Length: 227
Image (tube, rainbow, N blue to C red; front, side, top):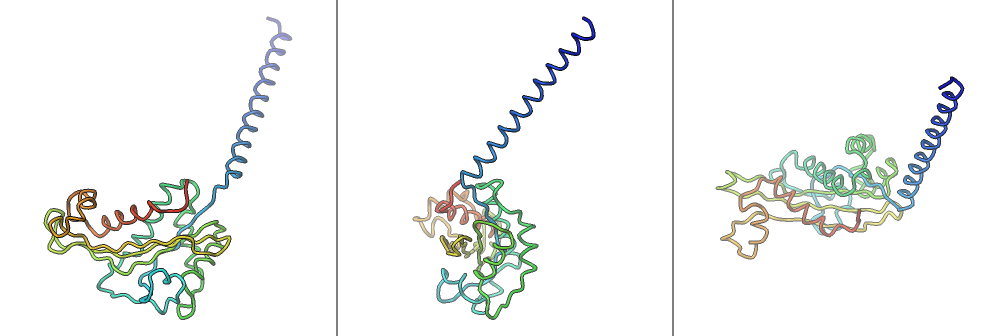
């Protein structure tokens, strides 16, 4: 094979390779466009707050922080952080790639100036959502979170949790969904109507974190946003 023929073959291979790359780039661009056109929305979590409005759980997010009440002995010190991470994990599971990283949300939250006398969680949530430029924001509050006393097979005192979640549409500023979970674990012999949940929980005494996770999974069965 002479040098001229060899060079011509190399040129053909190079042209084919270039056409392939251009085509691949077009396909990738089309996929990105379709993903955007499909209306995939972003979502972020605001850190949980301790306490609730004594009049109505649903109104907690729209009432000033100063109106919240809770008993320190009824809430484990790390309960708010545990539930925040749990909520983030739930969203990451169902909306992979559309959830703002928790570290980013927490960093943005910590620089927001909050007037605890006048501001409500919703006011702060809307500010955070604007900073993060998200389509939806979630928040939550916890007013009871006590661990079991004893082991999983024999507890002297059961775990008990009570918390809520809220979903706000950033476009309208409206609260579009809220759900609460308030449960103290019971033995099967104490409440036969609770048999289904008892066996779903592994037929054992749960920790507060395990009970909270069970509750959050139940709450998300009614979550209005779909993948």
